[in-house]
Each structure stands twice: as C-alpha cells, then as structure tokens.
Image 1 (cartoon, one colour):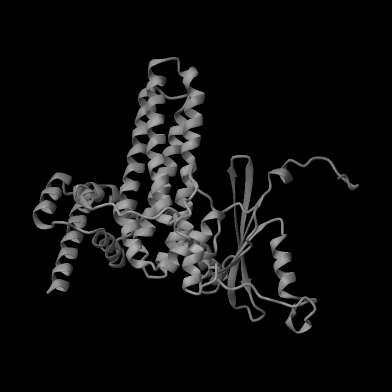
Image 2: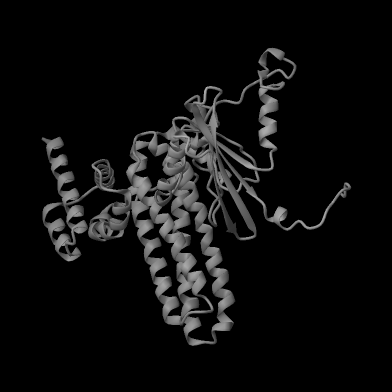
Length: 408
C-alpha cells in the first residue's frame, strides 16, 4: 500500500509540472499542490525530475521550469529540517559557501544603492571588486559538476544533476550581464540585473540544501563522500577552508579503500623491460608514457569508442578542470546541457567518418584558448575514440620576428 501511495504522489507531482509546462498559473497550481500533496520529501522531487526526463521531457524544459516548480514547492521545502553536517564533510563545506554567497549578495546590494545615490564613478570600482569576489562561487559549481555529479551518475541518478548544471550556466550568464552593465547602464537596469542574479542564486541554494544534498546523502555511501572530499582540493573552495572533524582518511581506512578514486598507479621497476609498451616506433615503460603525457604543453583528454572518458593529463596547469571522478563517465555528461548537442554532432561526424577534426578558440581573461578534437581510427579504419587537446596560445599569438639562438 505504501508503494502505491508513493507512486500516486509521484504521478500527482509530475502532473503539476506538466500543467505548469502547459501554461497553468502558479497560483492555481500552488492551491492544488497544497490541497493534494502534503509534506513532499526532497527525494520525491528529485525522483520526479528524473522520471520526467526519462519519460522524454527535454532537460532544457525541466531546467526552464525549475525555478517555477521550486516556487510551487517552496513552502513545503522550507518545512524540511536542515541536516547538520560535521565540519570537513563536503556537504558542510557547500553549506558554508552558501552562507557566504548570501553575504556577498547583500554587499552587492548595498553598493548598488550607493551607486544609485552617489557619483557612480566613486562606487564602480568597489562594485567590480565585489562582483569579482562573488565569482569565486564558480569553484562551488565546479566541485558539484566534477565531483558530486559523476558519483551520483554511478547510481543512475542523472536528471537533477543535468538540470542543475544548466542552472549553473544561467547564474554564470547572469553575473556576466551584471558585470557588463557596470559603467554603461542606468542604476535602474543595474539593479534589475542584480535582482535576477540574486534570485537565481537563492533558488540554487534552496534546491541544493533542500533537494540535492538530502537526496545525495541517502544515495551515496560514506566512502563515496570520502573519495569526493579527497578530490576537492584539485578544484578549490569559495572563501572557505574545510573543517577537519570529519576525516576522509579515517573513513577510507575503515573501509579499506585507497585515497585514489580511480585505478591505482602502476608500480613498476624502472629497468623491468618486460613491462615496456611496444609502440610503432620504439618502446616505453608506463612510467615514461605517463611522464611524456604529463609534460606535454597541452591538456589532453581521451574518450573511447563508447564515449567514456578513459584518461586525462592531470597537471597543475590545466585550463579546464578535470578530476578522477570523470574516469568512466559518459563524455556527454561532462558538458553543460546546452553543449551536449554540439558534443553529439562532433562524435557522430567522427564515427561516420564525415569529419576527423573539430576546433574552437575562446578568450578567457588573459588566455586565448585553442581547443581541438581529433578522431582516432585503428589500422582497420575502425573508430576507437577521440582526444581533446586544449592549449593557451596567447603567448604564441604574440610572437614576432625570429629567435634563432637560445636565450634563457
């Protein structure tokens, strides 16, 4: 009976979202929600999103309606008690960053009020600095995208993470708009951009703390969280230093797990010739192969013929974030939803042998990043995957004249 009631509630939740999609007013849906469904749990909302996507509703549609259905469910969600997490646990760190993000938004609001009342030139630099400070929140998003989401996907829980990545991109676009409006738009328009950013971040925090994290806590094991925690420093944190009460090392030792999240490093005697890998020309040991790839002046990611990420060069100078959690992940899930169709187009053209390369270039602050994709085929002409190669070519583009002698 309990399973039947749960299924009924899920059907009602999905029906509400479909009605919103069909143009029903929020007020009408709220009334129906309050009348028909009480005490909805975070897991039920997350499962509803997953089911809608599995039934064919595009991720972009669920993403578009996300803020609306959070508003519909907001009063119910706020009744959910916030879980207490031990300092050092990834969810505790996320929570600290959310508290500080709210403070940064308040600081922005105060500066925008000054901008309106006083000479804008006196306030603009402070506004720019505060907005730049807020953009450290990007590290919060990157940890979710590269640490938490891949682990959830291993449990076939993909819908909410895909939707939330799309919401991350909306926030990124929103703060770019606010940044661009400084110095050229009226204070009224500036305030409108700010309110849009604040609304998006507040909704994101509500979705995280009332839906994503409680659901993830039920789905992931203590070992999963310990492995996530060990990979976090690779990306970094927004304004905070994680606590050390919850110790990932102790958790892994208790469960007899290594600190490494993917394959253990190969232990090799340097002179053991039997371990050499024969290549078309010459032979290298695994250690030499690793050193060679690690010291290339480019970032390399290898995706196999089944679209799974199998390898990336793990260096300190990477342009785009990569963590061990993406090993074995579908490459489509390593991109925001709005980019997946481009990824699919490239992969299909490689598999069908219509194209064997694709390239892009973008300006990223002081970097000019050249991104190239190369199809890989074996001697029989079979598609065996592709590599992504990224390089900051700003210094190369700036070269002039010649240098024929060594000049260190």
